[in-house]
Image (cartoon, rainbow, N blue to C red; front, side, top):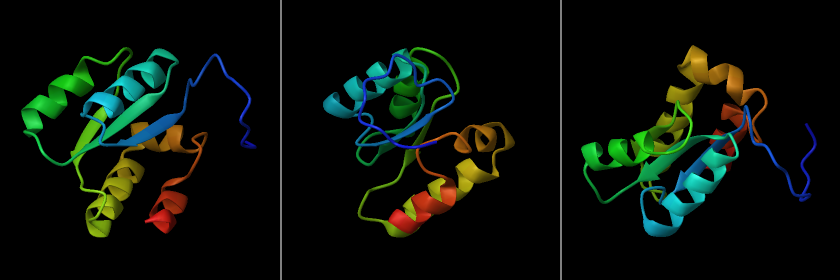
Length: 108
């Protein structure tokens, strides 16, 4: 699927990986993307797993995930990509995402 900057009304079957996903700006971004149909992966660094999971569960739609993965920790980011790729439910969605797990791993 070619990338474009054109506005879209739907992000159905897309995955959004959001660094700082449980902070104010990241969570607001996740809410907007989830409202448009994206499945969100919230990456967080400085809060409890329970708090992060509650924020992911409160997003519109379903199937959102959260991971403690500081953006400065390449191994943690690679682990997140691998975990998503190894999940059969999520893997089908990666095929239509903006980046495949392999492309995501190459970015980190």
